[in-house]
Length: 316
Image 1 (cartoon, rainbow, N blue to C red):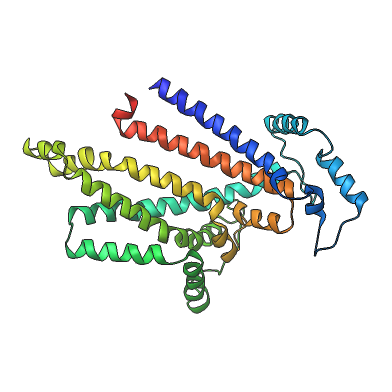
Image 2 (cartoon, helix red, strand yellow):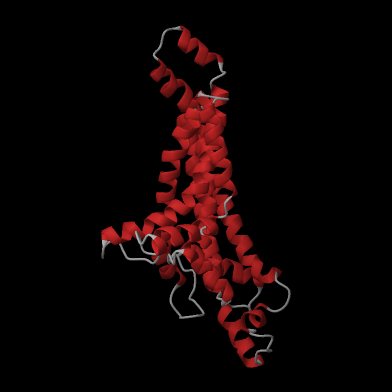
């Protein structure tokens, strides 16, 4: 088991290094001079002096291998550079915004698991019956609805028409816990609508597959209670693929929750990345992509380790 953990951790570190290298080289893969591209606005050619000054500031006047090792050295020290827009450190901005996105994703994940796994279990246990067809139909509708449509509809119904909740915004938890949770609720539900449908489908498919296994029939023939068969023999063996799909979905939401953050005016990291791209704030773009990609890699590492706990065959 320890060998497996070490191998997977080492592979994750190598993958993170590869991603960092790709992000570094992306600046040179863009056609033209990066300094000119960063300073160009509205098709106006920037002054040569400004271009040269930016090249020196970014270190583009040095050989590429020198820049690469300097880049890795800064990363090891936690230095992601400074924003072109306001001069603040990229790390401080990410440290402020990332917890908000993680909170949004975590809350949506809890909602999705709470709804999707029990619904998938019920549908699998009653395959072909009316409840199975109804739940599968609802999941299909949920997956077909774009997230911005869900968010806009929720704002119109619950905020504008019924006046039950604010239309959007953000208040720190330390300042007003109650209002913070109210503002968190609608964007989390908007994400959970499609997310729970994905969890439901995977849960239903894996549970239905496990139900046909020999060990389930053997456990029932021995007179083991249905509840114990369900929890120890069915659900536990079915959770592995569910954990995998949940990890992948959570990882994709790190950079893909931008529509929800925009619709509900939630000041997270995904929406900020789009703003950085629009303003061509290269240090912010590079730092944000690096952090999101690294989190995605190590989130999948955690899923692999969880899979090892759920499935003893992986440990061997």
